[in-house]
Image (cartoon, rainbow, N blue to C red):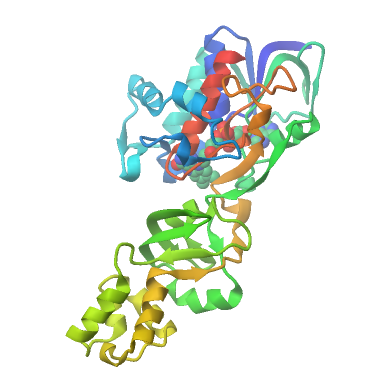
Length: 392
Ligand code: FDA
C-alpha cells in the first residue's frame, strides 16, 4: 500500500496550485487526474491566451450563498501574487479591457509553469488515473486506483465544476462530498448563453452574428458589455455575466443604447428631420440590421414625422428596455463555469477543510464560489488552491 501525506484529486488550476504549495512545504504529495493531460481548461481558456486574473478582484464579484466566505483566501493570495509568479518565470502578459489580464503567448505556458512548480517541488502527477473508491480510513483516507490502494493523511477535492463535460468535467467532488455528508448548494450552469423560444428565435434569426454594446439586467444586477445574437439565442459578455444571476422563468431587460434617452432623442429628431425613417435614425446608434429589425417589430411608420408619441414610445422601449423571458440556457455543454457546489458553511475559509470530515479539503470551482467573467474564476482557483496548500 502506498502512503502519501496529501492526495490531490484534479490536476486543474486549483489542484496544481495546491500541490505545488504543499510539496514546497515538504509534504509528500500525489496528484491524480482521470484526464490524459493536466490543466485542459487552462489551455483553452481566454481563447488560448488564458485570462489568468483581473485587477478588479473584490468579493463583490463572486457569487455564493455565503458571500463573505471568499474574503480570506482572496486577500491572502492576490492578483499581484500570480503576476509575480509569471514575472519570475519571464512569462509575458498584458491588460486588456476591464482589468482583464491575459498572456501575450499561449495559455500552455501557465499549464507548464504549474506542472513544473509542483513536480520540481517533489509532487508526483499521475494522469489517466481515475479514483475507483475513496473512503475515510483510520487515520486519513483510503483511495482505490486501478493500480492498487493508496493511503492519504489528507485528500483535496479539486475536480472543478460540471461545465463542458466533453472535456472530462464531472461532478465528482459533489458526489464525494454528498456521500460524506456535506451539504451542496444546487449546481447550475453559469456564464452561459441564453436560449429563446422557437417563435421568438425565428423572428430574431436574421440578426445572428450581430453584436452591439448593451446593458443587460436580471436578478437586480446589470452588466454593460457587448451582446451577441446567435443562431440559438443570445450570447456575448453582457449576456454571459447576466446569466449567472438569472433564474429559470425570470425576465431579462436589455438596453441596446445605454446612456441614450431614446424617447427624447426620437422626439427631437421628429421635429428636426421628420422625413428620415426610424430605422435610419436608429442605425446611428445601432448596427443597421438590428435597427431595421427593431423598427419593423415596433411597426413604426416609414417616416419619423408620421410617428405619433405612442409609436415613438414603442420604438424607444424596444431599444432602451427590451424585455423578454429566456427559454433557458445552453447548460453545461457550453457554460464557462458551474454555479453552486460544496456549501461553504461546511468549510473553514482559511484551510478549506471540511468541518465535519477532518482531513478532507475542497477547493476551486467545486466550492460554492463563482466569479464573474474576466479572470475572476482563475483567481479563485489560485487563491483557494494556495490557501489549502498552506494547510494540508
Ligand atoms: P479545473 O476544471 O481547472 O480542473 C479540474 C481537474 O479535475 C481537471 O483536470 C479534470 O480533468 C479533473 N477531474 C474532473 N473530474 C475528475 C474525476 N472524476 N477524477 C479525476 N480527475 C477529475 N476562467 C478565467 O478566470 N479566465 C478564463 O479565461 C477562463 N476561460 C474559460 C474558458 C472555457 C471554455 C471554460 C470552460 C472555462 C473558462 N474559465 C476561465 C473558467 C476556469 O477554467 C475554471 O473556473 C477553472 O479552471 C476552475 O479551476 P479548478 O481547478 O477548480 O477546475
